Length: 369
Image 1 (cartoon, rainbow, N blue to C red):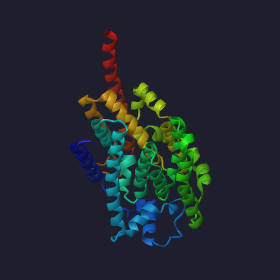
Image 2 (image 1 turned 30 degrees about the horizontal axis):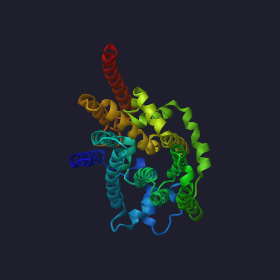
Image 3 (image 1 turned 120 degrees about the vertical axis):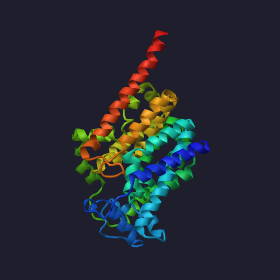
Image 4 (image 1 turned 135 degrees about the vertical axis):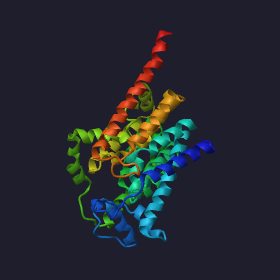
């Protein structure tokens, strides 16, 4: 990646960080939000706040890092969230390039990711969700470590990340599939088991030592699995989470099929992310770990099917930015919740129609020839 492309990604991130703004955490609308739990955990450090319920009480990494800084906790959350978010986009862009994506396609894809209000925008605005950013960075490092055979890095990263959010557990079955798919299970299974052991011990030990009120994972699943009966929630998880790029993999279904046939473990990983959303009441936000597979696929489509069509790329960026607008966050706020739901839907439909028309226009002359 050239210096100008790296600066473009950083500049776009800073602009979107400014646009997303920050939460007025003292507002009555947010008094019951998770952010107050993380803030209380940071203020209680090195002690534990016995009032923090599960699973938040177990997510100690972010609040404890905040508590170690010699500044006010609210400011520390804001500073660290911005720093870690910039680190996330830099690491992810390098991961894409290392995975065979050209620097221009990686740069374009990163700008699309930065405009995703659920995966990038929300934790910027609600900057107390530092653990969410740490989780995404952790997944990138885990993918890199396993693909590179760096088992010490894999074990260390999954160990740290599990102290931020238990979602990282889905990496364990994912990379068993990876080792089977790559034919390396027999060679590396001992190293693999040794690498995940500290993380598993940490997961169990934290829950043993911290006596937190609230329900467990199984009870959470029973409580929230019924949300899939709601068409709007299912739509939000599958389509709205990635708007307006959601249907690009279906438009370029051959590219998508090829991508997943070569990387079945990614498909398993994304399915596990979806299953993980059934353990809590948030929806689109819980799909955030799927970013690594989805935007990797989008980058491949951009590189092989859309680039260098500047018009279609410009339209895509504009619609991605518009889809990222919100009625609650951002400088440019939508007038209410209804436009918040309609805008990404219309943007997704519009982009899909435009890309389909472009694809048909390209294919037809080839058939005629």
